[in-house]
Image (cartoon, rainbow, N blue to C red; front, side):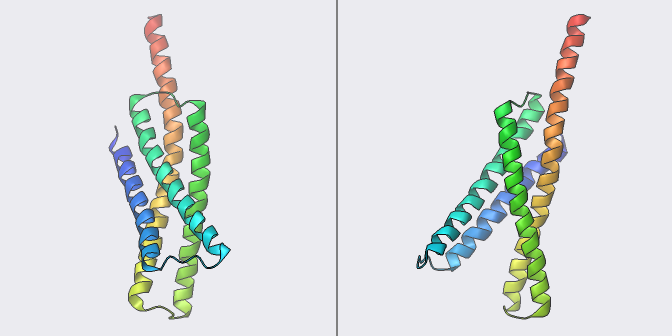
Length: 162
């Protein structure tokens, strides 16, 4: 496997750790009380974010193994790939927008102490950067798997013909 795809696997694990750790730490710091029905909705959204990121990152690691083996991606896996890509891209776009809003707000006001602002800003920036890299590399990986499989079939046909 190419070192680029090994780095891609590491960044997937880093992104998974950042998002799950970021959300878990913030939930740990705030007390769990369900006073309004909207609180239930908030926790369902948090759970869905963690589920989408976990499934997408682990699916990407599996796809790099598929690429290294030169196997074909079946239709069900292609559908799952595109669904996960769209959900993950939406999530990362939200985080990127939130990073922009947070930076803009921090420049205008000083609501939070400086160490909290820096911590949140670094978390948002690192999640956005790793997420955007994953989205780009994930698209490249999809097309490389297709090309790799077609090349393998073409080589097999050429070997049989000669």
